[in-house]
Length: 196
Image (cartoon, rainbow, N blue to C red; front, side, top):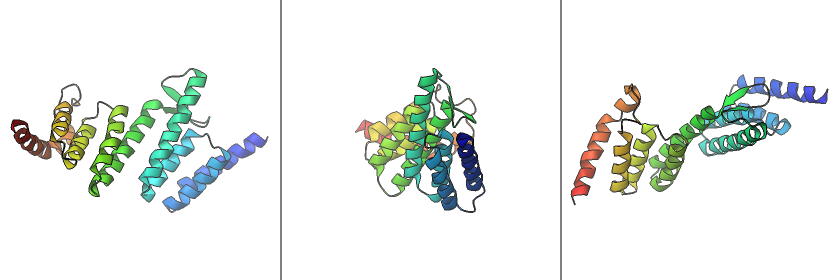
């Protein structure tokens, strides 16, 4: 009976969070829900999304990393490998969690590059690449960060790898077309460094 009441309270808090007028209010409701159910992967992911809306990408990344740790522990206990249970009422794919985390790491790196902290951006992008090694945009972003660190050889290596046929999606669409001009310019610039 007590477990059902707690579950109902968590569901009500999730409803309040999803209907909240502001991200700050959503975070408050999700904090309360996590107090009741601290090992809920779903609540941690939802709070990470709300934190991003608040502009707190660092805390969002910490929430997603914690969610992944909890999910992996639960999966190991159940003998599962690709699918993990959130809070008992839903199922999340490990790939989805990795994709969300990599996206947030990429976002944080972009923010760091805007303020000139390229070396920390490289670390975030390296982590994103480890999660999703077949995403060429992360390699291109890291090449830009290496450029800011004045590491042209490493930048060129990432640019070359990002254009490898196994990494580039069959439909080269928007994601890669937006980078073609800067990519070609960077390759020309780094070719000069290579000759020197």
